[in-house]
Image 1 (tube, rainbow, N blue to C red):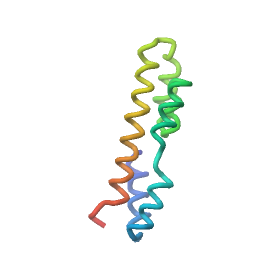
Image 2 (cartoon, rainbow, N blue to C red):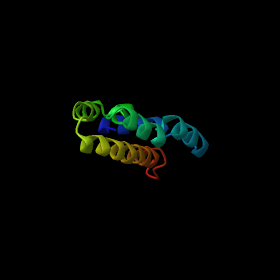
Image 3 (cartoon, rainbow, N blue to C red):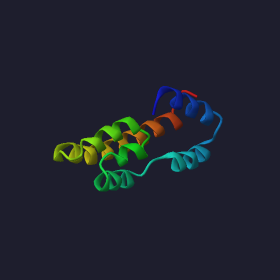
Image 4 (spheres, rainbow, N blue to C red):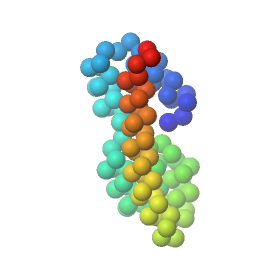
Amino acid sequence: MNEIELMQIKDFVKDMDKNQRIVYYEQKKKSVGIAVLLSFIIPGAGQMYLGRVGKGIILLLTCWLIIPWIYSIYDAYKSAKDYNAQLYSIIFSKDD
């Protein structure tokens, strides 16, 4: 997520109670499994699913090399986990 998206989410959730934040988080989070599966089938597709289109295209164009393909799968997993952690941090931050 870029800084603008982070600020928009933070502003959007500032007046929500905890239950509303939980529902919002569940709607916005990305599936780690889907990201990994997409990158396994089409290298770079997991990154595109996470909104990192440029990185996904680079990985797709270099996937004929086995190392970028393997990296694509790992990075999709890590990126989805990072995305969800960052989203959780913004939605449930204590500095409202």
